[in-house]
Length: 270
Image (tube, rainbow, N blue to C red; front, side, top):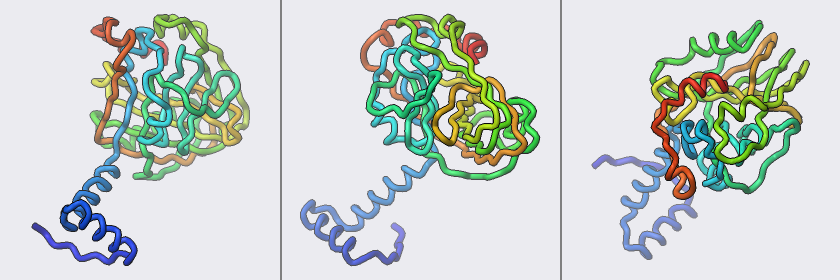
């Protein structure tokens, strides 16, 4: 066993010793368990509700509480019940973009993926003529095609083209729902791109490739990004090494045929 000498406040020491006496657990065991739990919480991971295949097949019923989702991450993307708008999770808040943007409080989530965003690398991107330019610039900062990444991009966008799906009946396949999406164009708008990148092999449960949502600084404009232009963007990237998927315990998820490869449909809807 190793020895580690540390200095802690007397008040914390008293709490540890009191708890040790009451629980009959040694101070060494308590401190070791606390350190293990804390360090595990720092490991970059994605926490996801349901799967992309379920979304493609029209399973839009909420299964997990939004408050639980935010316990596991402050940055990410998702969908609302019935596909009622695009979900953007930024700085620990959930926003619903469906023409207008509103902050969403307690509700059930059918699909979402979040991470505790921590900047591992910061870089600048200039002269963005289209969304593909951002993807190519970010490619240079991904160390592997087999890991997951969270990317945040902040700046003033000269143009921003987004879309938002709107509420559809349950069991409407994603490809059919996307045909009725609404599109929006914004000029000279400051905001943030929230992006998750997933490997191709993950298509059965995630959305492979880059997946961008936008939220303006004033929290009035947003959506799934179709295209954009900018003169300069500040980017930060995080590599993800763990993936935690929580599946619905009831409803049509249990009976729907999810054996189909969703890659083609996901590509068409993106």
